[in-house]
Picture 1 (cartoon, rainbow, N blue to C red):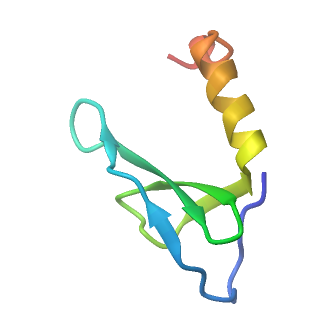
Picture 2 (cartoon, one colour):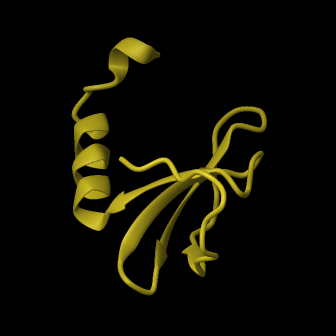
Length: 72
């Protein structure tokens, strides 16, 4: 995963509706015109991680399969 550092070229990201759990823990997923995928928090709108859509798909599948359960 890539963690952008300033300065960076502005990118138009099409963000989906934020997913919020209990409290104000809200995350959102996005994609840009070139197909690059993004994950961000609504608490820090300019901070996000980015990688390919395939990498994001693999991450989501791994989380759904329980790979991150030890963090709960």
